[in-house]
Image (tube, rainbow, N blue to C red; front, side, top):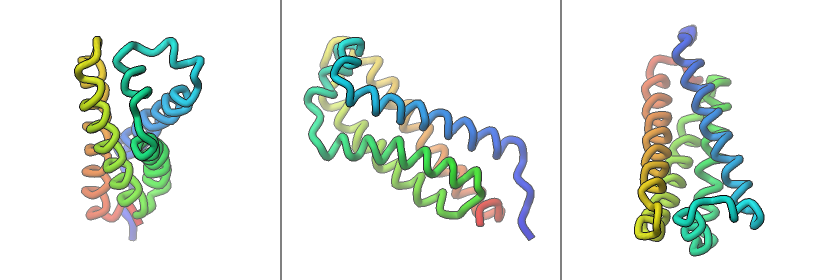
Length: 138
């Protein structure tokens, strides 16, 4: 018999999905050269110097995170590995962003947004790991 999830479970899953959906939107915006003109200088520097493997890691981070949150809301155990892979994508993307963008003007905002992404991704992995033990994910 499966345990019924609490409202907190649903809230965390929904907020995680919204967060990652915004990340997906950000990814799509970054692929549009016209939209890049509106980005702060530190962000433009990171995007201009981003190799293909970091772009791939960024897409894994945001689209994998969105998929992981959908799987979490569907109460599937596959949410855990999807969110873990998303976390790896966040780490690779963040490492590159900090390496290139921290020295650029306005780089502190880049550090803050990268740090926030890391916290959210790690918290989602931790939460799904914890809930799997309570039989909320099957």
